[in-house]
Length: 122
Length: 110
Image (cartoon, rainbow over all chains, first blue to last red; front, top):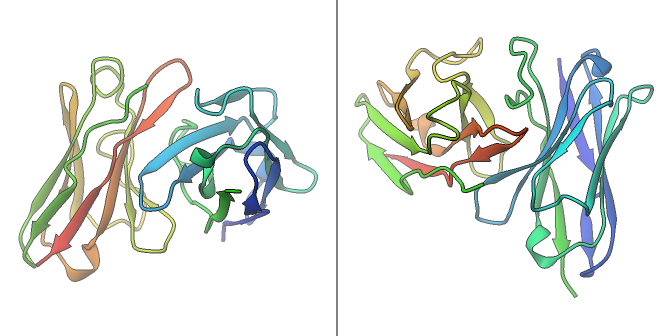
């Protein structure tokens, strides 16, 4: 069974940094693109970033470009999101999500982790 | 990139059908057949129910179906059941390695 477990969320001051982790199990981690998607409280979903299985390619939403860095350690089956220069509008639940085996496209997400809450406030 | 447009709410009685629209532009929904739909129950993670406009992952009931016409994609839920009450989000590939979501639709089963 595929499992994705996020961690690392918490309260951080504006301008601060935080690193999220997503521990993966139940599949060959290095084979699949992985993404981060966030959801502000009471709001809709927003795609944040994606990284290919080999970690050679990354893409970012314009709203986080230059501030967030996605990475992965395939030896540890773990996905990361380094968030710097955090702003109040980055407050959200951050989900990691996997490209499913039945779709070759990174922009299909199945399954998702349970999410970790990041709150940016002074 | 602007978000896709969904109605904030939709409703139907048990057994009825309801359709949720997702309107984009000729730069996303209108040009790519990469529309997905996600179901999200309160406090839970989203769950994929439709991908590539009309394909259903294994295990998703065939009561859920997707379609697209021009710049608008649609999700139809037939034979509504109480457990279908949830928020539904569409997404579309928007080119240039970018993905956009809709604002979400809250489906109420009356």
